[in-house]
Length: 459
Image (cartoon, rainbow, N blue to C red; front, side, top):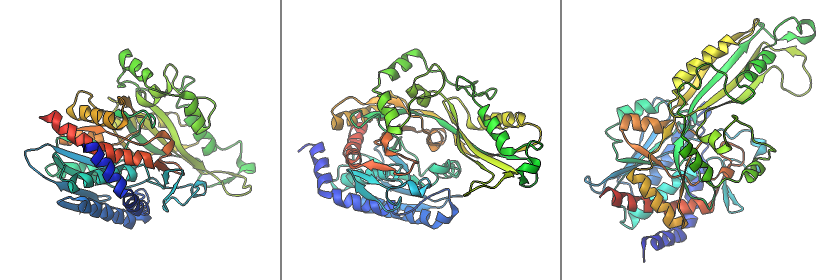
């Protein structure tokens, strides 16, 4: 019996238990951005630690940070063999708006052969694939190298404590390569390896006018309205070609050559299906680039939330004192998030009209990353996908961000390989997040083959 038959047999025998154990993790509302979930963060960390130990780790612990704790675990079979470190995160996005969920976000259930819950894909479901793949290798004595786990609780808020943590624990985290499943595939029948991530600059702006809310009849037309002014300021941040208007924003953008753009164009992409799934009639973005290029190799600016004044039921005729917005900029390699923060703040202050004051606060950020396609671990991932999917995987750049990935290379000197199994339709960060059972099991099936081929590539 070959390794694939062994893996699929093990999955078949244990799939019910795998789901039951994953559901235990999904029931914990580990929302890192909300202080009221601090205890839940510790509960999730404890659950992960115990899961890693039960899977076969020799050691696992919860390590405090300045923010939420990190779960670390390891199984060192032979110090002379390569070390693969699995990275993931147990924190999740807030579930609001709750009324849009078809089932409670922290009461996981299976419908239409999918797991429905906050964190089902991002990243608890994908992380749990690694725990179960490790369990298979540990129980069958087929782990061909050493393995470490570093599972954090701050990815969804920009990993603010992780640079300090990695520097202080660089010896513990020493490894040859980092394996991550926190990305997606192009489609269920198109296996793909993420070769690039965008960086992130995320800020909150506050525009203040009068010292209190005013009667809109008595003052309207004579006093600057902060909501009106903020709307005009935001509208001016991009031009008619959907290019960001901040001076210097594009100065460090790494331009991708025609050869790579042509390769991206060959990747399967159904624009009509893409639009249908999100119910839009037209795609909009920077002129001169395709949808995949806009999200993979070009930077962007988006308003993530905007509020101010009266938004309750009925009418209240006021001229608001304040208006707010959360604004994120997705960055590409060579753009530095702190530089972009400074450029944004300078620009936003400069366009503030008379009659209002502007306050800007940086929330979090991180740098972009390009994964090498000539690395032994990339070749191992390629072979593993080919075995389980029966076709060549496609390299592609993701529009998402994982702030810690660039830090790993900077501090640990290790490359990261991004083996995602999610789908665009999984609705991560949105109501009704889900993860197909097929993808969950396919990940468990594929990951052990990565280890097999990686060790072979390193010999």
